[in-house]
Length: 315
Image 1 (cartoon, rainbow, N blue to C red):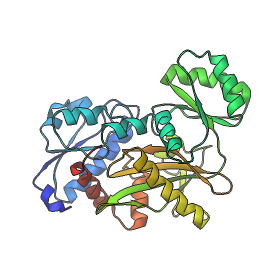
Image 2 (image 1 turned 120 degrees about the vertical axis):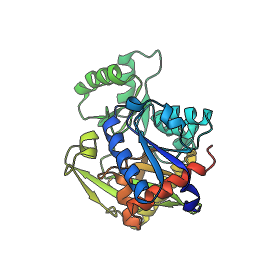
Image 3 (image 1 turned 135 degrees about the vertical axis):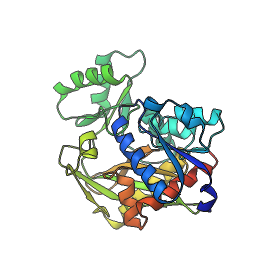
Image 4 (image 1 turned 90 degrees about the horizontal axis):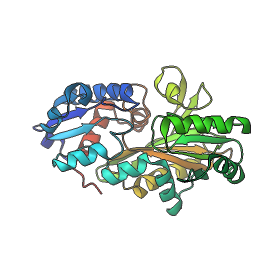
């Protein structure tokens, strides 16, 4: 891809809007905007909550820096496709599948990609029946998660049976659909996947050592709350396997251009895919820029590579 061919295009960085991750999105958008300006692109930054959507429709290419619903789940992607405006990252289907953790886990399982065992709440199932089934199938410890949120919002680790029902009720009240998966005690790792000159590359693995119990929203976006280790301290064979699984997960969902795949390893370093993020954070503290830097790609160059994904065919 000749980057100079995009220099005469009007690029709109869309960030903020109305998700629970609005503040982080604004920070990502500002950094992306500054990088594109530095690279010499004709760029405008738009927060639809403040500016509306009209300025977005006046652009030639949209760089989506929205995190969580409804910016990362296919809604905005479909809106832009309606107007024939190219946009960065994955298409409508891949975005929707990746945001729905249960749908993506079903695809991982069907694709032979290891993922922690889980149960989801059936539409008419009584809560006491769901909790009994959860304990029978998974046992303790376990993790309660919203089906469609990002940045570890609403995630709770349960170690004692007495805590399960109140946490499940609270999570359902706040987020709606939930699922529960086995808690795997081990390393929390993440793998950036980037399409470089037509080839998918798994970036060096980042190991996350949070000062809290796990890598939650606070640990993700507060300086000093997490130790970042690149490359992850893993058995070499399992390290390569984790990178391979990240690319497989990216492909299984039909992602385009880039993604960040979150995994957990057990005590023997066996990796399990948790989820795929189609619009990874791009702040000073974000994982994808850190992994790209370890690979030898500076922030501005990473943004430029991501920009070129706007011209890829979306599935």
